[in-house]
Length: 504
Image 1 (tube, one colour):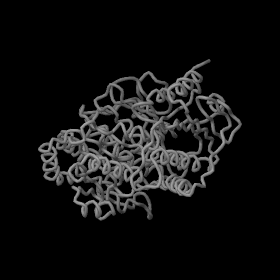
Image 2 (cartoon, one colour; image 1 turned 45 degrees about the horizontal axis):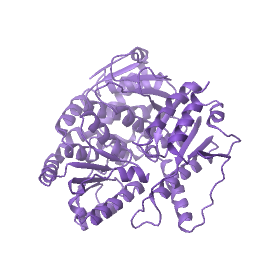
Image 3 (cartoon, helix red, strand yellow; image 1 turned 120 degrees about the vertical axis):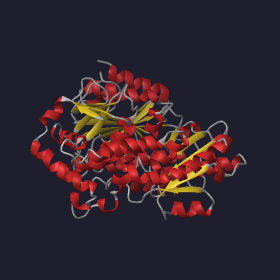
Image 4 (cartoon, helix red, strand yellow; image 1 turned 90 degrees about the vertical axis):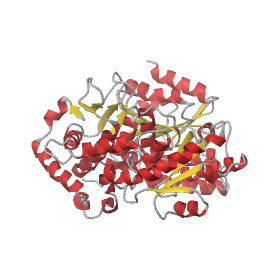
């Protein structure tokens, strides 16, 4: 591991000394670091994962052997937040095939289904066992296996905490179940069963991940601790924005995983640090600039993936100590969930009041509590950051990602991009719990082909729309500026939005 950059020389010695003492308390799993009332009491076993997760190796070897002997070569992972982001960066880093289902968009769900279901193995990952997205995906895959005359228990593996409702029902139904450590939070779970089960099934040597993490962790309590140095820089060198770029690095996709770890851990009590993931080192950047290869960055962190996983978990825990927030809770994530449930209830009763657009044409409709008729008008007001939240089809509507850069260039403002509902388990906490200085651009779209969720009184299209509207309600109740752009023709509307914002 090697960290470098001009920002390190600016760290204050008194902060570094304080963090070294705190790091030793983290190593001892002292839950009082973050105050008397904290979820840390039941969330500190991530510290031991580089060694304790080795206990999973025999079980994972047996599971992988079973999958190979049954020719289950098409691996699909259904999970949200840390349950999908860590496996995704593992697959990308090691150049392995893994289909990620972290959406309720019906087209994305349909596109995740392999052509040959007999070779498909689906991993269902849910810490609580009650995540609505994963529950819906599980029911969908159970149904399509049955429709293809395949036994779902031969094609689905469950990862969940012990004694959850999902754990009990899945075992009773004959599914293979791997329990994760219940004293590890979702976003700190990269080196737990949630990260390692998918890694093993796609052919990654997880012993290497654990060896690298264990070796790195030995340095975190020393006077020259890289975790301490980085946490101190993230605290002193910026008051909110951190730009991350992993382009051309050896850990493709790492920035997305770090984004959810830092944003969801720190974004509380109207404070926090907001990661802004950019596409390349030449993209317009703001705040503290962090990269993973040599280049023009304030901070450069070069390490293997196992080292990066454990390093940034330590960094987040130490940074939260300096910010005086609990790194292990997510008090505002449940708000959007509750509003989603309320909207779904009104749909089932046919009492949902359809909102009226402030502007509408053949391509799109605009909804806002402000008197605006275009995205450009919305961008004219100042903000510390803009957030683009696209409840669309990842892998199909990817042109929409370009909005992040063009909005940032047009407004000269830090701009994030998130796929909905995936970001709700990531930056969604920061949006509502962090500093109230963002402006929010929500993008929804018509679905050409909807899918029924087996056993549910609503469809996937209704669910994703309820999630979008639920999050919008949570934001607008805080008087945060929001515009929702609903795409009737996705391709032409996205092209039009890009042209509009790019235009001088």
